[in-house]
Image (cartoon, rainbow, N blue to C red):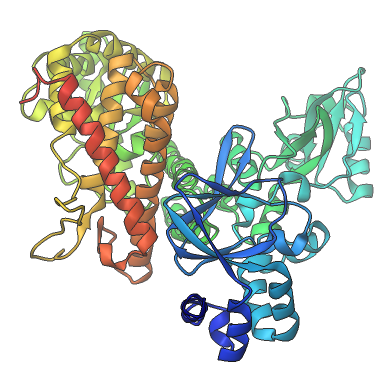
Length: 633
C-alpha cells in the first residue's frame, strides 16, 4: 500500500496543478486517490449523463473528448499522459458536458470531488490552473454573453465550435407585413436600432428580409419611390439556421450565400436572428469580414492587401481547435472568391469572352483541401467555337488566362512548377479537346497519362458556365466505368507510396539531406488516402471532388469504404490538421511551408495516433493489391 501511495505521489508531483504543492499536501491527496483501467473504446463519461465524481488524471494511454450533435461528432480535444478531464462536470454537478472515450488502453488516477474542491478553496494556484484550463470552454450562458464578446479571440476556448447559435443570436426579431411601405419599414428599423427587418406575408409566414444594405443600394442609390411596398426590395428566400447549430456553421452559410444575417429557427419556430456583427463580437475576427473586403475591391492591389489576412484566419481557427475540414472549408471559400474576383477583372480589362467558358480548379484546390496558398493548379474549358473563329477565340483565352494567372501570382498563389495552369495553351482548350484528352489518358494509361489523370480528374468549376464542367464530368464518368486496366494503373499508383513505418512500428524518416530525421506527411500519408478514395469514386461514378465528400457518398456504395469510413475520415482529418499546424508554425517563423515533420516533436498520443493512421493506410493498400492483383505493375 505504501508503495502505491509513493508511486501516486511521484506521478502527481510531475503534473500541474499538483506540482505546485508541497509533499505533505500531495500525500494527503494520494491516500484518497484510486486508480482505474479503461480498455480502448470504453466511454468513461457520457454526454448529458451523470456528472463526474472524480478528477481523472491520465497515467497511461489517452482519451478523446467530443460532443455529438445530431449525427455529427464534434471533437473538442485529445488528452494524453499527465492531462486531466472531468473537472467541469465535477464542478457543475448537473451533467457531463461531453463524451470522453479511451482511444487506447488507458489508466487513470481518480481524485475524489471533495478533495478537488478543498484544494481549489485552499490553494489559489490550483484554482487559477483549472480556471485557465477549463472554465473558458464552459462559461455559463449569462456570463458568456458578457465576456465572450470582448477579448477571447486567441484563447483555446474553441468558441466557434462549442457555442450554439441560440446563445449569440438576438432574440428580439422585428417584423412588418410585405405590403408595408419602404418608408415605414425604414422607420421601424431606425426606431428599434436594427440592421435588418423580417418581412411577413398575409399568412404571417416569413417570406423575405431587408437590411441596411438593401435600403442603400435598392432605394437611396436608385432613387426609388419610398411609398412602394417593402416586398419590392426584400431579399428572398430567407436563409435559416437551427438554434442548436454551432456558430461555425453560421459563418459557413454566410460565406456560401454572401449574406450577413441568418434567421434562427428552434423547434420549427423563429427564435431570433444572428448577424455577422454578432459573430465578430463573439470571435473578435470573422472570415466574413475578409469576404466583405474582397467583394468591394476593384483592383488587384486591393485584393493583394486583403488576401494577406488569410494566414491570420488559419491561426485563429487552429487556436480554437477547429477540425482540418472546418479550416479548409473556409479557406477554400475565400480563395475561390479571390479567383472569381480576378476573373471578373480580366473580363473588365479584355472585354466579354467570345464564347462561354468555365474556370477549373485542379489538385488540392479542386478537392477543396487547400490550406495556405499552394501552387496554382488550374485550367480553362470553353465552348466549341465555329471553325472560322477557332483561332481568334483561342488567342483571346490565352491572353485572358495569362492575365488571371499573373494576378493570382501577385495575390500569393505561386505558379505551378509543372505549368499545370490555364495560361499554358495546352490546358486552355475547347470542350471537344478536353474530351479527347480524357479519352487518351483512360484508354492509354501509361507514363505521364496516369499522373495527369490524377491531377485533372479532381477538377471543379469555380466561375463561368458550369454546364461545361458538368458536361465534361458526365463524359469522364461515362467512359471510365468498367475500365479495369486504367483503374488497375490508378490502384498501382495508390500503393506506390508506403506509409513510413518500420518492422517494429518505428517511424522511417529521411536519412540525410535537408529533411533529415523527418517524414513527408503529404506524400506518405495524405496522398495515399486521396488516391485510394479517388479510385473508389471513379469505380462508383461519384461526382464529388472533396475527399471527405467522396467518402460520405461512398459509404453506402463501396464495400471497403463502408467497412472503414469512420477510420478513414478520422485519419484524413488527423493528418491534415498535423500538416496545417506544422505549416502555420513555419509561416509564423517566416519560412516557406512544407510537409516534413519531425515525429519526435509530437506528443506520445500524437505519435500513437500517427502510427495507427499509417497502419490503416497500409491495410487499405493491401486491400487494393488484392482487388487489383492482375493489374498491379
